Amino acid sequence: MPTPQPNRSPARRPRWYDYAYLVYLANLLWQPALDPGFSRVDAAVTLLSVAICLLFFLRRPHHNRARLVATAALAALGLTVAPFNYGANVYLIYAAAFAGGLWPSRLALRVVWGLVGLTAFYFLILMGVGTPAQISMVSSVLTAVFVLGVGLSNLSETKQEQHRRELEAALEENQRLAAIAERERIARDLHDLLGHTLSVITLKAELAARLAGRDPARAAQEMREVERISREATAQVREAVQGYRSRGLQGELAGARLALQTAGIRFDCYIQPLTLSPTQESVLGLALREAVTNVIRHSGATCCAVRLLKAGGGVLLEVEDDGKGGVLEEGSGLQGMRQRAEALGGRLERSSNGGTKLRLWLPTADPERTSSQALPKTLHPSPDTL
Image (cartoon, rainbow, N blue to C red):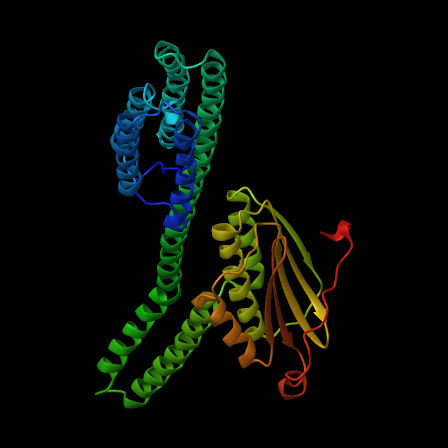
């Protein structure tokens, strides 16, 4: 059944996915096929009801008010068409599908239980038009079961979607606050680093200007001192900027742990003692950040394992999750990761089979010698190290 979302954004799944549930309209064919007394009027009412039902599917309401209207209209359609075609109970089930997308969840529950109660009227209508008691009872019971099941199922899916959106919003807010904190730290560090130095340079330059006329030697000495202090300040600024460019691999691991725990995903980590160049550490850190972001946004995983190992004359980073897997189009993040690895003579592999595993290997020896090597086989550390 189509599952409307708890906010204005449409579902991410393909649009045709919802339309596949229209196959249940075949339930309206039972009475025309089995009842010789099915008249042209009954057929006309049935076809008109199908057209009205399709109208709501094509509009795909995403607001609470529109969903309520669709739910009420489909429920009324089911009760109205029941005297002409007892397969009209399918409209009550479609109504439950829309009701399951209402938000907040307590509103959806009330509407779903209300639809379950409407099946009693459906039963009375069937009995009133002379439908056989056995058909009336079985059809009404099945309707109540399907209404409740479909409504609760779609409500559960809506809750998951809402939780995912809230989680993404929280992660974006955390990233925004972290960026603000980082800018404040940079401003504070630069103030502490340059404030005193620039003040000293200003004082010595003023002193040199005053001494230029009566003591040129002393003025020259002060200007040489200004030059020395300026060079020291330049070196300090370069060191500080170099430190800002990357959090380092340890910083990325800490960030990955925090992000995954915030997303409710267990984080397992195994790191062998390694000696990495700054370039290698930067490539591995960026790859780890991109891989963890993909796990949080796309995998639906409950556990993510990160392993950093010595393998095949190089270093191997593995990020593996137990999510839904599947073949995903390689976006700019993975493409950039692959290009950075290949620039160092490394390789990137990605596989999906009951989860997703990303493996990035970088050589520690001569890139020309190791670039032709096959990617080393996966190493499995013992469970107690994870």
